[in-house]
Each structure stands twice: as structure tokens, then as C-alpha cells.
Image 1 (cartoon, one colour):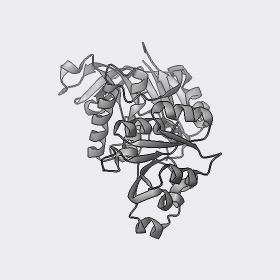
Image 2 (tube, helix red, strand yellow):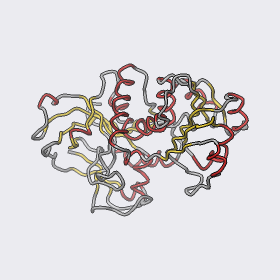
Image 3 (spheres, helix red, strand yellow):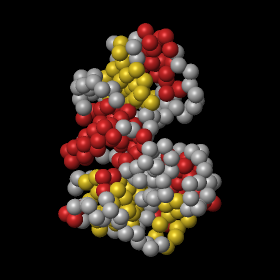
Image 4 (cartoon, one colour):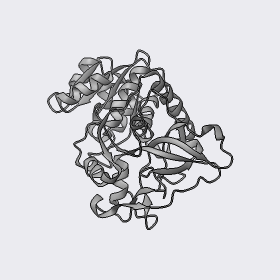
Amino acid sequence: MKAAFNIARGTASETLVIRDIDTPAPAPGEVLVAMRASGVNPSDSKLRSGAQGPMVADRVLVHNDGAGIIERVGEGVDPARIGQRVWLYGINRSPDGLGQGRNGTAAEFATVPADQAIALPERASFAQGACIGVPAMTAHRAVMCAERPLDGATVLVTGGAGSVGHSAIQIAKAAGARVIATVSTADKAAIARDAGADVTINYRSEDLQARVIEEAPDGVDHVADVDLAAHVAMYPAILSMNGTVGSYATATNLTPALPFYPLAFRNIRIQPIFVYSMSAAAKARAIADITALLSAGKLAPRIDRHFALDDIVAAHEAIESGTLIGNAVLTIGDA
């Protein structure tokens, strides 16, 4: 079978290779999946580049997310699962989620723990299934860590056209929230509105804080935030008392300063999010909710570009260019 490996830290063209290897057999508790799609996430490219640590082996089969069809099962796995459409998550990580594993989804076949192969509703395509593990599960946690009913609440989603933000809008809307989304262009505003955003704010051409206050004079109840450093100073002004934040990135400053007392006076709670090390309970809730939303047609991850497995270098370069609006996916096999 064909598989894509990372053989060193560095640029995509220097470190990603396609190799022909034997098709693996599932170990006890595992399933063998005939891959149809492999998601390409920013965390995959950052790991490859060296931004998240050294190599853990001479070669590592890349990517965490994917979708396909179970072809074989290992000992202890119900044979009835053979032929099941599934989406995969967290495959290329260590058990604690903090380090890199050696397995991955960028291959014609992948062996994965059976409990990390989740039934993919017929309504969802394999390509969409490859956009769930990191982007949609992150979005779910960024919204649902509010730990309050969102029906009738106002939720601010920053970066509403991004791979995570787009799904966060859909998840918040499905929960009954009114959604305000930030964007940087008119095209992205249209994408966010198509996802369900009630209001879009162009943070490059408008005064973001003033516009949020205008749209939510009593404060937003929750923020699903793509850049904590860019927005934390305005949290006390835009969030309601006891408001909450789920932030999954802080790109403009990796060590942001917090206005502690203004946040404390309003009892604002900030939850940093790293999808790979989420608790088992958070993952289980995300899987259940996402499955229901996919089945109901209320969650449809946006895919910007499809690449062939042989074009994995171009896929990583596209992710790193920052020009994609949505997800990048490798199509494999008969997808």
C-alpha cells in the first residue's frame, strides 16, 4: 500500500515522502480501515516542521484525522463492524495527547484502535468525515465548555470562516444560540452567514469592541476564540457577568497578559483548549453531539481544497500559506 511519511523536521518538500509498504494487520482491539480521506490540519504541518518537538522515530506515518471503511477487525472487535463507514480521530498522537505517535491516516490503509473509529452517518461524505477529529471536536469544545444551556444565549465566534470557526457557528446555532461571527473579508462574511451566523463583523474595517457591544448591549454569554491574545483585553467589556470563553489558539502572542481584576470582577471564566488532551468525558460528549448533528444535516464542515495522496507536499504548503478558507483533505482510494 501507499503511505505518506515524515522522515525529518523541516519543510514539506524536504521531509514528506510516499512509500510502498505492506498493508498492516489489525492487532487485538484494532480495526483495519480502507482510507478514503485524510484530513490535513495546521497541527499536522506544525508537527512536521519541528514547531512541536523532535522526531519520535526515523519515519512517522502522518495525520490524525481521516475517514474510510472498516475492512478487517482484530481480536475482541465485533466482526459486524466490517463494512462500516467510520471517521477517525487522534491517530497520530501519543496516548496522553501531548506527543506524536507513529501511526497516521495518510495511507491507503490504517490500523486504529476500534474506539477511535466512529460510525460516520450516511449523510456525511468521507471528506467531511476527515474534518471532524481536530476541527469539529475543537469547535465543539470551544462552544460547549460554556457548560450552560445556550438556547437563547449570544455566542461570539471569532474567525467564523475558518475550519474550526465554521463548525463552531453550526454547533452554537444547533444549540439555539444567537451567533455573532468575526471575519476579515466580505467573502468570509458570506461563508460565516451560510454557516448560520446571525451577525458578521469585519474586524479589519470595523471597531470590533464597539460593534459587539452594539449587537449585544447586555454582553455576549460565551466566546469561542481563535486568538485569545487579540481579544482578551476586551473580554470584560463585551462579556456578560459570569461569561465564559473557550479559546483554542493565541497566535498573535503565545504568552498573553491577562487583565486579571477586570476579568475577576465579572467572574469571567477562560478555558484553554487542546483537542488532543481533552478529557474522555469531553471527547465522548463531542462524539455524541457531532454524530447527531451530522445525521441531522446540521453540521457540514467546509472543505476548501482536495488533494491526491501523492500531492501531500502541496497540501501541507497550502495549509502553511494561510490562504485556505476551510479544510484541506487528501482523497484516497475510491473516494
